[in-house]
Length: 153
Image 1 (cartoon, rainbow, N blue to C red):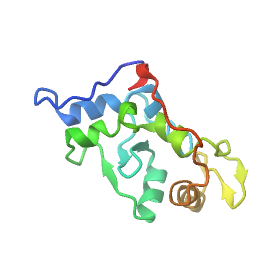
Image 2 (cartoon, rainbow, N blue to C red; image 1 turned 60 degrees about the vertical axis):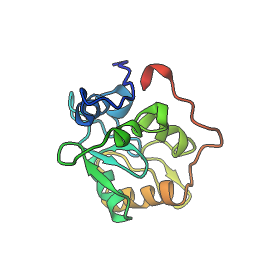
Image 3 (tube, rainbow, N blue to C red; image 1 turned 30 degrees about the vertical axis):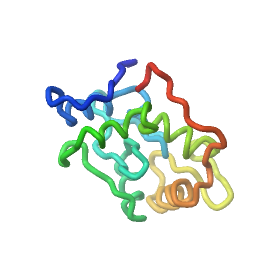
């Protein structure tokens, strides 16, 4: 899936339609935090708005536990600006998060000083601890800027 999602402000293509396409892109169908794969053909049902990531249900709960705003893809209203923010061109989406926030993180299920990176099947407290360490404390941030791959916007 190498579909390019072009940021637009047209009334002909709704934000919801663009969001539906974005959530199915190859780099957005794997949760950046824990590696959980989205349901085949659907993509994840939630976005962490603060970090512009498509996330699984356990990571959604973890972000909400520390007051990060999370929106439902199907039950929320979306603006073109919000959807644009989820494209790699604007520094959003899971590819960007993997570089910006998770570049120096251990592999899924691996330990680091202070905890371990969650993997599918772990307890919720492991997810919550990792999300706080990663996003609030910035423990795994990149030292270089994110440069989007033009074929993955």
